Image (cartoon, rainbow, N blue to C red):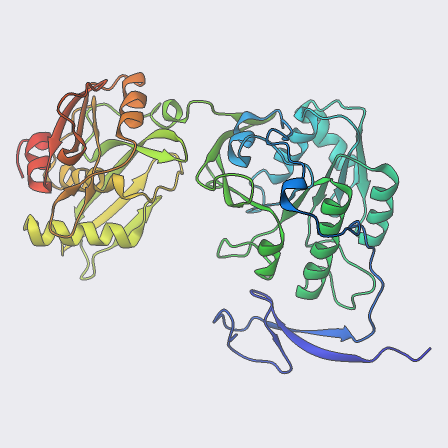
Length: 454
């Protein structure tokens, strides 16, 4: 048999763009210095065909159970997945190192309500390390099987033999196929390995979770095709020095991508937070200047968060602008509205804005809250503690309507708030609200109502 021909190909490590020569800038994603040389064999290899061959059938003849979901035993995870795990789904869980990805997957093996074996495959840790984590989390399940292996062909043999109901692979960057002549974690390996794993999920009707690393800019490591191939992309995020963790769905073929799950990292694992508003407001100071509360929507759930602003004279020629948890560009737009419409001198001020608790909020309904927090800090006027503020702000200084007003007000009432400043356009004459509401039509009117003038 003739030896397979080999050639060198350059792949972009960000998007998977292929080139015959090295390029400084990738034409696909525009990133610099991302091309890596890989040796590619032209010999076609046999791959396992797990997908059953079938003939085209009419759509009405396909059986479908709308309630076919597996309860993970973790309510916050069920919420993000859209009601539970779907059999045959391939899910990618990504997050920063040390954020708690392995802890979450190990807790899932102990709580999920399903029959049959669960196979936990680790290419990074030993059996003893996994045993230590399981003991710390109190995991006791006879059907939980541990496999430490990097060769995907060996893993495949064990899956075909055991026929597990759930497979967890930690992580996708550490496994490899022997027939692909490149290092684990390369573009070729990631693409081929993910394609093989996808065959397992769909052909054997197995739910599979693969853990993925992230790059220094916070995106999922590997080519973008990795995210396209899977059914669900979950992102686990949080501040390194903060014990709160947020689980988001960046892609979900079986549910909404707007829901979030909130956890608290403790010594014995991740604790679900059923009432995030209470946690985020637990340490809010009374009568603080530059502090306001806004109800934001995270999927179908309203969450009350505290916005803090600090405005101070800049000792340098170039004032600083920093935001944490809020969109920087939108904050810059709101500052321009204050300078132009309210004639506030902000050009020589250092401005810092923070969403307490590590939550990232990007909906326009918090615009008015940001403006009030900024003016409160600049003019040293505190906002009343029992007031919530809602409204989108336009470039002419008008306050525009928002969605889900009643849900936000009900959540605020549960947390003890009495008054809400909302857009006039949201108020209906005969409707009763759980709080005392004050409608405003402009930024100037809102500042007069909340701060007594501007």
